[in-house]
Length: 400
Ligand SMILES: [Zn+2]
Figure (cartoon, rainbow, N blue to C red):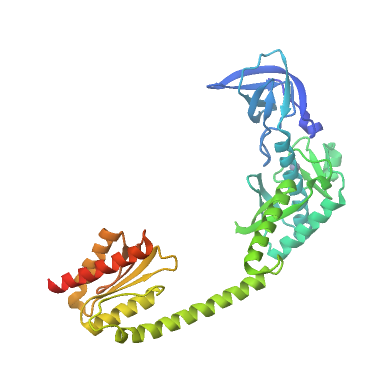
């Protein structure tokens, strides 16, 4: 098969073309693969996904290269010897070129500033993955990102060229692997890198480069990066999210961190007060209820307080006792059961199991204690039903 003329290498902005069909063979049910004399479809490679689009009205769903021939996976058979019109999905390609060119500029900055190498690159969804071979910190990444965006705003031409052997030998360029024969170089934002992908015509067309996240990876960092429209969408989403959070906290975007700090401090203080008040309540409540009380409903008690109260009540009446604590929404209740001593431990365990069967409660605990929660589908009425059930069950146990 003769090698395919790669129109995308000479003109990355070519969207429509006409070429001859050299071969078309079945590749599965309803699927064929076609080779053309020339193509603007970029085959998957170098971290850049393939183009999609149409060929002679058929859908192109996959494109890959084999030994210099570009094969197009198409939804209809194309007649060899005829000419077909091809059209690539331009928004998809433009997105890939924004991500790819942005990656060149950012990798160049990381290399220039820190001697770091991009050792893995993939244009994925929703972000571009870049694996960097040095453990760079947040400040270093922010400095590189700032420099990369300055290069975008400088809007200098992006140049793709294949130098002769002498020029190549004299040219410093980045490459992920050792290369032989003619090497296609891409110059973008002062960085030169060996690359076979498609790129924008100028750095300004990248628009924006944003590092979305960084995590330690194989002794270096793995970055999630967005460029162009993706970067704009990510920043717009984050801004909308910050504004929504700001409305909840009465703070403008940019002042969220101190507002969240204050809210967390207030929450910790409220938690401490709630715990202290519950301890007080549990200390005097057993003396304030009618003598012989074995079941109490106290909305809002936490697990620790409910358990402590059940134990105090059990000690006071010398029999197993129960505490129900519906939550703020009233659709679930905490339940604590306690026995006064080891002799009643089995009764507490049996009652916990009955709660599971009757109310779909889930819980458990050490001998003589049971802690769990039960759903209350009909809220207040459900809580009353559960309380009546516990009272009856504890009385029956007393008779048995
Ligand atoms: Zn490239």
